[in-house]
Length: 132
Image (cartoon, rainbow, N blue to C red; front, side):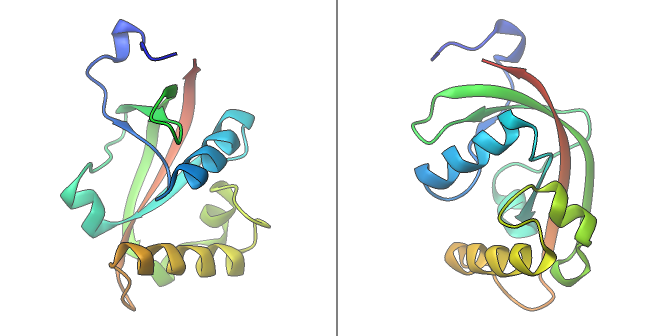
């Protein structure tokens, strides 16, 4: 589906991750119900999209095709080291442990060029509104 419902025409459109493969992997977790949170560097949110509670976003797959709509239910900004185990599990990735989450996210932020001890991250919880 390349067309999205008119109700979401003005919504921001973005994909999870930093590669088509990761976008598809994380999207699959959202659609299956296992992923209900995401964490971005504050720097990337300030440069692109800062999530706000109540906002809807159109989520794209790795090919840039709209696949679903999510609604942000909670946003917290905090140092990377203060992200809770509960939040890490809500991301639904890897083996669901805090150690896996920490290692994978540090690697992601290093690829992004934003990694630094004490860096601020934006922790966003969301709900799936509609799958296309």
